[in-house]
Image 1 (cartoon, rainbow, N blue to C red):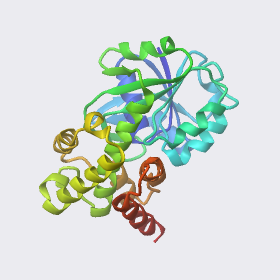
Image 2 (image 1 turned 180 degrees about the vertical axis):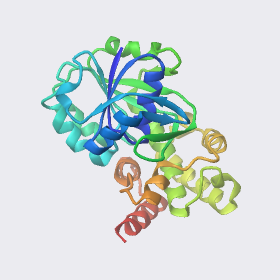
Image 3 (image 1 turned 135 degrees about the vertical axis):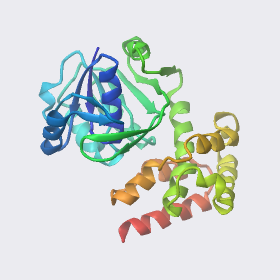
Image 4 (image 1 turned 120 degrees about the vertical axis):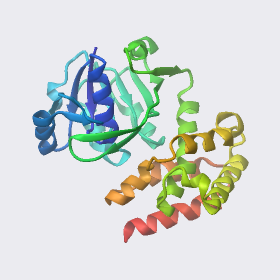
Length: 286
């Protein structure tokens, strides 16, 4: 089975390494030639395990039978969408972004078979060729358009846990709600996930966000019980959330596709989340 992973950030490098270790054919498409050159020379270091993976920037080198796994952040997605409109027209494509705003771009793509993917692994990019596996989990997939059968091979990769979900909106929105609760708080307070439980003030804020979300989306009670939120914070206690990692690295925060999406989807005003959104936006502009 062949894969072309688009994007060599934390998620892209982790995914490429896991697939290579499982015996799959893997190519990694980077934005910058310098990173591709380093990966080709050194391989990708995942917690001390080195996987040598072909890395390049040219889309016309992607095999015709490869699954396209789009692992770039939301802010870099427009250039990937542009590439997809004229490349890999018959390849199945999986979008692995946080949030849901990227779904607006998909109906305009020429590819017939498109799925959404969620990565429930923790990953932290250390440098251009090294990534830490900060939490083991699984991959989840759901159909956005086309034939579900085209993606079933993704569920049978030795050593790579994966699940198929019948409802893409529910699968993705659950992850959005989870990110809405954890990411902004950790980024604002500059704390790791576990401190959302151990710090009484942070925990109070976490509960208040859940209460606000419950009023707007009562389905959260079954989709994402509060106990699951606290369990995740406990199991990833030492993890740095992706939004906090972006803040510490001086990268743009994924505020629009997570927080703003939730605010816009709500039938009611969400004052706590709106405040968090503007606080983070204001700090980002500094």
